[in-house]
Image (tube, rainbow, N blue to C red; front, side, top):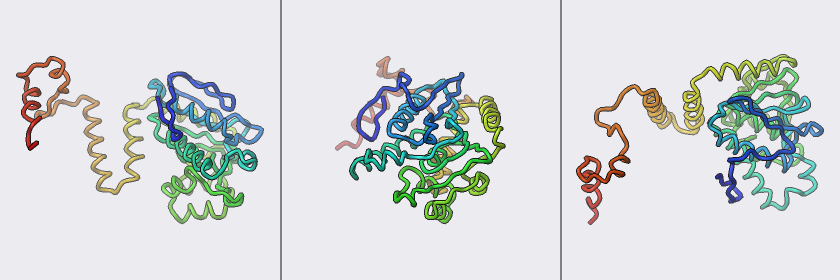
Length: 296
């Protein structure tokens, strides 16, 4: 079960039904295709809900290791559906707040998946579409791809990554340029700024994405999970704290690889002693000694 910012629980054991996206699995690889090509895959309220529910489903599937995101019809995604917003479907300001919080949850769920995520980008990747890519681990795009944050010219502001994640990726000054000017940039500039990993020929995107998938499939997936987690968390911490977690992560890797027991550790959890109810076991004795220690 998962809890969304709206406060209700939802089971993720069953793959959700989708109308506006295509979901496919091939072994340990899941592929999500945003499928509203007639509006350049704009994120309508319904598509965003389907996307979030699909991410929740993927999150809970241990057999999945890699997720590929792409758009139908020659474009990745043009962000939130402005037609819906103009029609008042987002509601009054508090409803807008709640919707943005839900979209932040959507991006956070994507970013925190213990799978490796790849945005495979063709055509337009703007606004919310760009925010989706910033929550992914890898971004591959075509030479014709165009990206940017045009919200300023529509009288709105980004709500789920266009200022927050972007400033962590490319810094304050460039984030101001991208958001305040609202230009649409060529793919190469995304590489130069550190938003994208690779730019490939317009007819090479599928092959390049598959090559990356196949390389990742060769990896130690426990190692990938740990590396992704520690990198994502450490970037938010000061160096000294980050290095502490890095050291613990290294020790965890050693434990996972069964490199030997620590002499002054229990070597086994205390659960066996608890189940046996053996009052003479060392664990039971230390618990009995501890339970009333310094409680006066």
